[in-house]
Length: 274
Image (cartoon, rainbow, N blue to C red; front, side, top):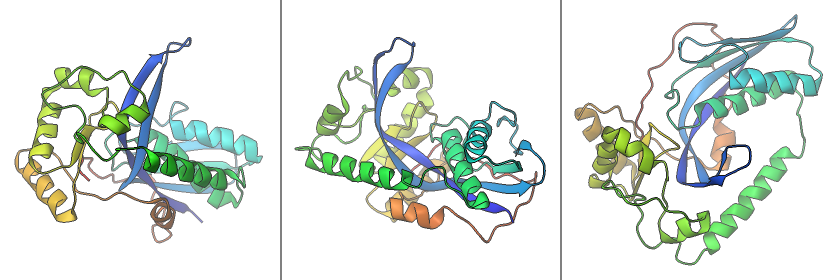
């Protein structure tokens, strides 16, 4: 019986680029927020061995370089699963849009595999995630003045990159350091942020390294009005909502959808509002 799950997108509430590490990479400090926009993953177990990835979007690799493939390969080895796994990815999120599509797909593929095999890699993993979430929430709530000050991150007109830690970002105004690099090269993204701020967003920002730009609004109606305004300007936009952890687990599995093999895929929005 195939297992169908939703793979939800995320947005970055602030993103601070740290110093370079010995391996050439940089430390990153950010807060992730899950949103309701998602891809659909369908996984089935067959006789035999190996992993097959299917996706109608040509931008998504279907070989060993796919993050889902690597996740499934390691999980099957850890679980001792000697089966053939077929995974279909229905892309609804923009590819390389800064919404965590690839990494989210890998996590959802792991979840679908555990459901299909009725096995879990770690029985205490969920408890550890919940405990970390509680600690992070308590820490953020205790930061003095975290709700005061500028809420729109890096102004659309531009400013110097903030070389500060996450605590200071929360206290003085959340920022995404990538905006200082991305906006000069892609001014249209700066324009989208301006449009979101003008439309009443309490916070607007690039997500990750882009190209998705989102705005947070006080009401659903306000978000929908802003999305309609952007679409009239020729900018792909969609209103959505944030998800709590409880809502995530309630919505992640889709038992009513069947496995369909290679086929249709939905169009993707490159800009986002919440």
